[in-house]
Image 1 (tube, rainbow, N blue to C red):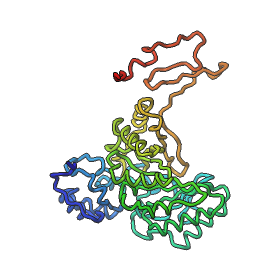
Image 2 (image 1 turned 90 degrees about the horizontal axis):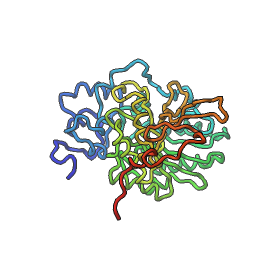
Image 3 (image 1 turned 90 degrees about the vertical axis):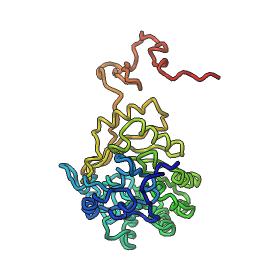
Amino acid sequence: MDMNDGADMTISAKPLRSPSDLIGAGLVAPQGRAALERVAARYGVAITPDIAQLIDPRDDADPIARQFVPDPAELLARPGERDDPIGDYAHSPVAGIVHRYPDRVLLMVTHVCAAYCRFCFRRETVGRGGAATLSPRQLDAALAYVARRLAIWEVILTGGDPLILSARRLARIVARIAAIDHVAVIRVHTRMPVAAPARVTKALVAALKAPGKATYVVLHANHPRELTAPARAACARLVDAGIPLLSQSVLLRGVNDDAATLAALMRIFVANRIKPYYLHHPDLAPGTAHLRTEIAHWQALLRALHGRHSGLCQPAYVLDIPGGHGKSPIGPAYLSVEDAQATPPRYRVADFNGAMHAYPPAADSPIPDDDASGASRLEPMAKP
């Protein structure tokens, strides 16, 4: 039985774009209209039918709703929050380009998404109206910037969601990037296989490929429920066409802030041929404090994944340093220096059970038995 059977909910075939739409679909109560109108006046609102079907309106803490349904808490700005939390503006030499690292650039081809996340770090520009895409002149200038800089090895299509563009337009952009000899890799950041999987057609998949260039797609998903059968099929169309998939997820309070959910998310990625890549600490975007949790909490969850789940399920936990200083890994540390002056230097290293060990081990240290090594804590083998 579908999780929403029996709920008072009517999902439109069109995206939900206003508080009235959300009330009509049964996703929010009518008495919340005034507060949500204020949020919608400030930030973009859009929930696709595929996303709306995942929301359980009977659950006040539904993890899908927390990501997409506007919340009055978004109007409460906190100290330290900023309109451009990762410093895109400071590294944008021409419209549409963000050049923060030497060998790669972002090419923001659109400011539109199929669905708008409530924690978006570009929420002050994405979904706010105005020009939806780069003008032809702006795109020319952006690609000319890339062509003049031989150090640029990778172009990352982002925005907005690049897969909101038509297959024809996307193919033209990819072909123009591919014509730049020193660009070897084209990376596409998208939520589309989750938000509107039917858009990931064979034509759209073909548009992403260019002879002689490597194309990667990075899927944004934050909860295992997002990987529905249609979403998995959309991802399979990409992988089966020879396009490797990676994942990126934002760590969010009430969405994926427990070890079981985070592990399930990583496992469903890997089972669908999507390599976990980044876990993002949420950025200091305005009105997102209710979705943030402390770094130490997430480090503890990463420790819970380590050793207990396949190495394929281990992404990098990163923080985009405010002000435009780039990403840095901030995952848990397992190594500490015991004696830097020794020859060789001596260290202490933690295993996945939390026990500490000397490295290199002392020459006379005993070989551990099963109990000491933790083997006895593993699940017993099944009988043949």
